Length: 255
Image 1 (cartoon, one colour):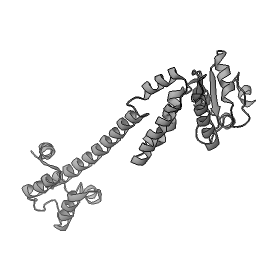
Image 2 (cartoon, rainbow, N blue to C red):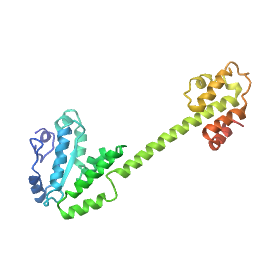
Image 3 (cartoon, rainbow, N blue to C red):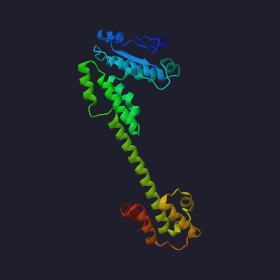
Image 4 (cartoon, rainbow, N blue to C red):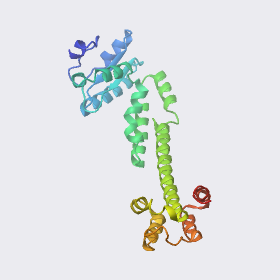
């Protein structure tokens, strides 16, 4: 009733989670597109999966049924009452077809870093595909998922991007640490100005050891403090991160 009141026409309430898949297939045979939108709680999600399995196991099923997955623990009434009508409208206007729904269902397995979970996902996918009774649909979906676990390729791209971002962040921290220390070494007249930064910065590994060694030698007490042995310190930095980028840092903060 509330959906109708908010302008969503041609909608019916299943009055529970037990939906007769044969009645749904009858509607598709008459040319209707059926969009299934159940609650976002566990019962609603399980009912959607159960309906999908029942549809695929019927020889008469020829697509025409799409699914809407609501946010976790939301139902249509709650979304309308919390000013999420626009989001609900978008979900209904962009429902998931059967292969997309299978993809979404198996995300929890293939997005896991646990090999056992990924293996379980592969078994579930094989079980779903083997249960399809419509021969033509079975060929289409098998071809779609052939050599491609659902969303696994996109997941690997995301994972690689996250790894690259993490490595870049670590590399930048290393370069900043080296640059700061080298700047201190090469610019005795500016040591007092960067004292707080050098003393409070979070250094890691050998950079931290070098910074602590600088403090021990009391190089912060005066800008007239003896200049560090550049070769000695740069050698330590090279051992930590390698010569290639250290040379570039030296150009910026040396000569």
